[in-house]
Image (cartoon, rainbow, N blue to C red; front, top):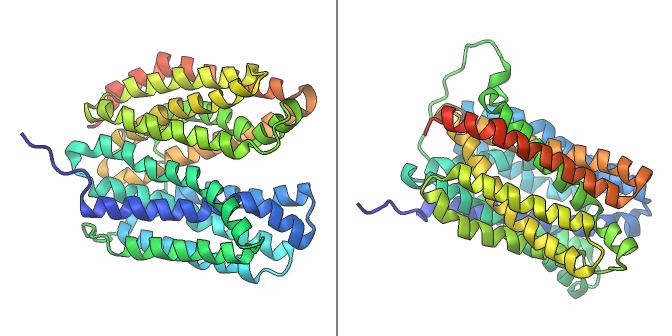
Length: 393
């Protein structure tokens, strides 16, 4: 029996739109500290506070966006959130002080968090059910490609534009508009809005059946939060690497892309738990290598290994959340995994900073390895069994 087409027109559109959302976002991320320092004379502490607001707002909005996506027509929610994401780029162009820039940057996190939840939910809706598990894995490639190409492109364009930051803000705004236009052409099954008369409860904002998976995900993203935040300063101070952060994240992204491609076959056969198990074991090897590393070779090799591991683990866990939720809670499932990931990253940044200050970077990175190992033990002892017993599809 011939399988339904995976890369149908609507899936291609939501895939492309998601790539443009993330590309327009990652294009300016590496430039913002430099822009704030050169334009407003902001110090490191001020820059950190300014940029942290974006992540905090995205984290806060995601549980609510999951409820909204499950309650209102998903295509309409996607377009409205995407429009707000596009419009708030204008704030970077008009902000005349670091305070105003911080306000616009923080506000920008809300439509980004909501748009990513809406887009991933629409992607699941337009996928043929027989190939949904595989399609979720491929969908993440749009994020990974943006992660790989965005920072590299930003640095090249900054040189080309002679350090004209406003030109890059305009470009990001234009790319987000293109993503909005593409998303607006998606044909999505109409869903009549029927007000839910039930009392507001937690399960309408977080997938309670996935709390075990969420706890495990927090442990895994904790490690990534520690590593991604302190990798640049660690490389500079410990290994004398001054310009290698871009290469580190490029290798990480290449690992993510390759693992998603190679893992698609297993996901197609619905081997979700197998892919998750493989990804977890590979990624902890990468984190341990990085924590132990005293050479540049180990530093860069760890990036690739971590990318390979996370590229298997994350889409498998996303499938777990989706397969534990009824169709009416797909948005909640997507927001739950994103909220769990963001929570772990935030804790990693916070606790990793304390460990690095008190005992050094190696202690912080080994702390990430220990938390990751706890998550893996919990996964094999509880999470995997729970998923296999309670999955709906």
